[in-house]
Image 1: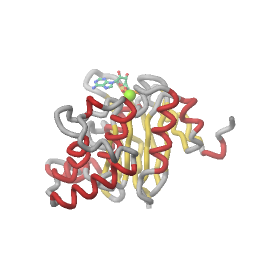
Image 2: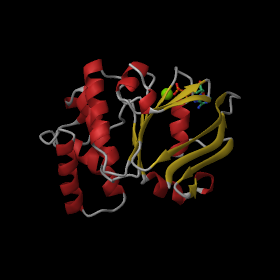
Image 3: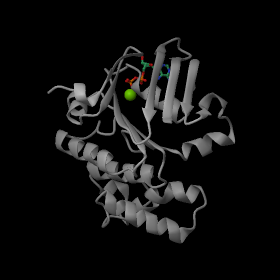
Image 4: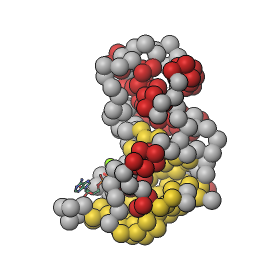
Length: 228
Ligand SMILES: Nc1ncnc2c1ncn2[C@@H]1O[C@H](COP(=O)(O)OP(=O)(O)O)[C@@H](O)[C@H]1O
Ligand SMILES: [Mg+2]
């Protein structure tokens, strides 16, 4: 069964701007793929429809067998538990330690403190920050801050991890490292969807690529078709 399905989805903002036009695609369990296109192509809008920061104007977004049109009120928070989100600016709480930031999704859902502590240590080890648990985000480099953001997004083992320009603030070497982390980290079965305008970086990952152009899905490139 697919994890995510867009069925003829269009999004028109109140400004009248059509950010997405009749977009359809499907993502399988455990699949990693990219969404690329120029600035303004609709990448962020597409991801926002998945974590319910925006709603489609037409068409349906399905998460497993859940039609997101029908997810309202309290169920929005429940849905978001199953979608890990990484932002370009990572949105860490600057006055909380790295460990507190990473554990937050578990605390918010009422997990026991002892269990949370153990899982925070484990996930920080996995992103290579086992020795920085007590630091404040401002004491870390940009690349390390993004690792914290990724740790926070995966700690609750979401079914889908979405990332919006996660390497937008990083130099090429750090960007490649972060992309490798996305590839290696998620539990088996977690799907990963990354929006990036950096086509060269995306191509090097040799994964499926959805290409948006002015809100239209103009290509769906399979890894085997990605020539050097
Ligand atoms: N909240 C909004 N209100 C009105 N227009 C918006 C809003 N967010 C994005 N847009 C417009 O929708 C289009 C797609 O934007 P976006 O999804 O951010 O593209 P991308 O992430 O590919 O740069 C752009 O023309 C943008 O200006
Ligand atoms: Mg964007």
